[in-house]
Length: 399
Ligand code: SAH
Image (cartoon, rainbow, N blue to C red):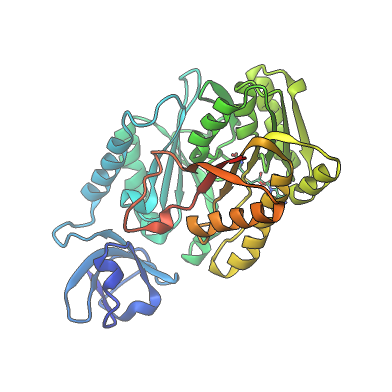
């Protein structure tokens, strides 16, 4: 096995069990190594630190498989990691046909995402995978075999069409890995709401599984309220609000395709379409024009796309987050509720809270933090890996 020897002092984060080794920390590479190969990481004094997957093209030069020197990375290892991930979810996530089974680093499989969808009629179980690092990519066959065996699910579809693949020297790819082609739309139920999911073309693996708990929250608080849902995509929060008995739901997205899908979701649930209004428009501009028109709402959801893809975008993204929260707050009636999110890993929870607090100050309103929101129990977080906590939200009430 090849070895990566670190520069003096660069072993610190690995000793704290952080699973990434950055290129700048590597002093030299010894032995034969290839992309995705398992390498041993050693401190400059020769001490063993971890076994990791080598990513020669990426700034994240190695991703840790195990900190245990006695544990080889082989088929049995892959199987144990899958079993461990499944055991963690067993009985933890209920009332849904959409569950994340493997969440990368937090499940000891850096760069791998596996989602499980179960159709409402129980006829179809579908796994959807994303291989976003070369380490898991070279183990693809073993991972798919272990997944089908351990879950009993025969259909596996790959959605490795994320641009991060290119940083790993991999091409984007999609297609069937096991079983047959997924249906055009998979009808899945969550919290008593039906969602039609397009696993081949939808965002991520087809659905924002990570917002499950917050959708339930919105459903619990929607009764009788006028709701505004910005960046609604296929209507996740809009449907939850309709289910919860909202008086009206105005949803905004700049993708006509997403809105068409959202409308179809309303019909699939038999909800009164008259309560739902859809705007194919830029949400930043729409918020301002709603304010000019004197519109007011009792419950607002702001869940924009990742506005800061990396550290260098943080300042500009912070201004954009502030902009939507500021105009959003101007539309909120006193006593009204706001669920506001950031899925930018580069913006930490304290910064996000500061941005929202600044927006409230500029809007001249006082806000009470009712709760902090995030991904569900199927998106575990490692204490040693704060980067895994990408989704953060605030549940606020205008006083
Ligand atoms: N809240 C959604 C997920 C949001 S994904 C859910 O829970 O399912 C982000 C969405 O923002 C995408 O649907 C994208 O089309 C939309 N979007 C991106 N930029 C936008 C803009 N400037 N105005 C309105 N929508 C935008």
